[in-house]
Length: 247
Ligand code: ADP
Image (cartoon, rainbow, N blue to C red; front, side):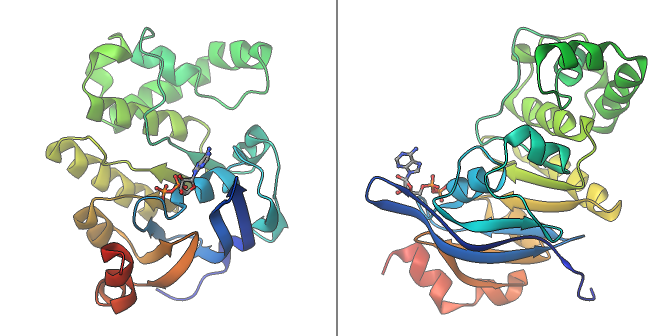
């Protein structure tokens, strides 16, 4: 792949909780059009980094820049409108609503009125049905989301992220707690969506998935990147092994 412009980057991003610097002057960039992975030992700041980028948390200092525009500290819905979608480590769905209803409320909305208006549009229903076909859950359209398997809920959440057609998609542990067959399906979907032009940034502990899927891997330790590059390079970097072994 040839060098594309940096899509999403941070400069000196810092966020502390009490005395803990969860993200510590992290300067990282992720190119548009790639499948990027963010890995690192537990507590290395990956989730906090995600939350700062998507506006769930305000960083103490540093900046988040998306396509040459500074978006630091903006509200989550504004960042989403700008084209960055995300999923959550602990899948966020509405268990008592049907799969179709879940997708209809997954649209970007600032308030309840906007949400209701958006979800009644026939185009939204068409899009929701298309996406259910895409993730292989169309036969469960009217099932309650709480009654499908955890892996299927992750696929539903991904479909929800796709409802607003983001061009950059951040996934927090898409394979966590998911059975191998569905991990395969999630991987295939990510690859297909990437081939259609979507950029991915994935936090994931499943190394088989990370190494087989990613173009670019960034390794975090103690709140900042310590190594990055293609999977084969990162895998054989002694600093990465050290970070995981905690030496
Ligand atoms: P990772 O996602 O890599 O496991 P986190 O971003 O969850 O790492 O955590 C990084 C550090 O920040 C850890 O030491 C964690 O205990 C701390 N931390 C994260 N969120 C909070 C919070 N809301 N309050 C206090 N400490 C936190």
